[in-house]
Amino acid sequence: MFGLFDYIKVAILIISLIGIAGGITYVMKLRSDLAISEANNVKLEMAVGEQKAVIEQQIQDFAAIQTAMNEQQELNNQLSASIDDLRNKFHKINASGEERDIGNLAQQKPELMERAINRGTDNAFRCMEIAMGSPLTEEEENATKKSEINPECPDLANPAYVPYGN
Image 1 (cartoon, one colour):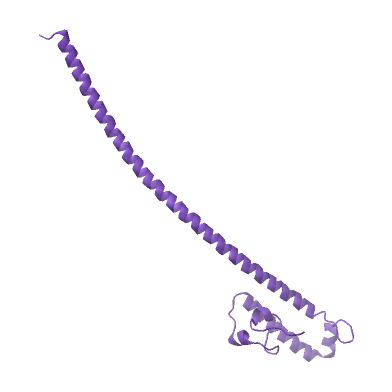
Image 2: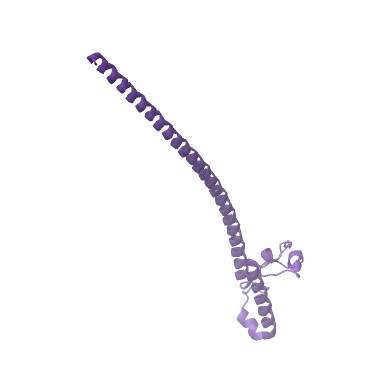
């Protein structure tokens, strides 16, 4: 019936069919792997885009923080100058060349000192309110004369005021 040559033909045919089936399976596996790789690539590209957006936002946030920090430092410098100015008000030299003595003045003219201290306290409280974010009134914004300003913090309370000669 079948000779050796026929068995070899059948074996070659079976091996060829198995090879073709294996090749087809291998190609199908490669295609599915390629589809998975393409999907992963799309996800990675999206992640890279998101990361770039996050980095850009961080750069903008950093710039905003720097600006706010510079503004805060400028305000701190102004407040320090105001504090120094206030300290100097208590150590003025009078016409006779002596340092002002608040205690002596209070004993000699208590009503005058009371009014001056109350007015100064009210002005200082207003300075604190402004420093904490309270908006300026129209009168404060438009004050240009020495008699109209808040003498405790004119640079903060009266932006239109330009001091002229002390």
